[in-house]
Image 1: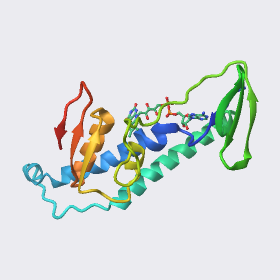
Image 2: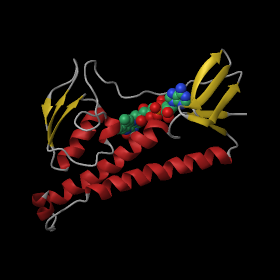
Image 3: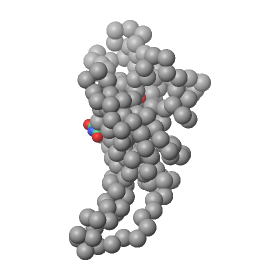
Image 4: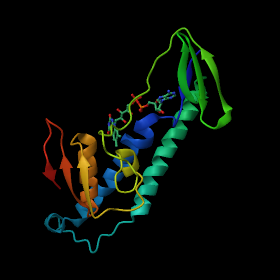
Length: 189
Ligand SMILES: Cc1cc2nc3c(=O)[nH]c(=O)nc-3n(C[C@H](O)[C@H](O)[C@H](O)COP(=O)(O)OP(=O)(O)OC[C@H]3O[C@@H](n4cnc5c(N)ncnc54)[C@H](O)[C@@H]3O)c2cc1C
């Protein structure tokens, strides 16, 4: 018998805050960029007038995609007979976990298993001294669901996530700098 204990969203970062929504946003940004390359389009014998985009529509599509895949994953687990337990788990013994959600007395319990896989993933690293307010200073989690586009943004981290965001924001008319770590590079986009 298999049980999966999930404290937030089934599918984790990739489905809800990572690969899936970011690729949907990136695909839309790529289309906008291609359609605005008038010179290249002309070489192909094409011309497109006034390419506009609906920020909320693009964000809505990314959110819907994540939600659909999350639902499909949930149904797959159910069809396989996997028990899906909701709550943040913590060890109370070598083979025992208690789980629950803050403020929810209706959710939670205790589960015992001989074999336990810890697959708790990771969360965005915030350098010491930086206060996240979700409005002017935010992590990639917030950046995926911004309700507005800033005119200019500094991105800390030149890994693929930072570079993906820089490409997407640049295609949407946002200027910015990418600040790499010790081995990274600083670049203006
Ligand atoms: C913007 C962005 C784009 C990305 N794009 C790509 C990509 O294109 N390709 C790629 O390969 N990777 C990509 N990634 C990375 C990818 O999302 C992660 O590598 C992957 O999600 C890690 O999977 P995981 O199962 O280890 O952890 P996670 O996906 O983080 O899952 C861990 C789960 O454990 C849960 N959890 C944590 N602690 C507890 C607890 N105590 N009790 C119960 N549940 C708990 C969390 O809620 C979470 O759902 C991207 C990430 C981001 C942020």
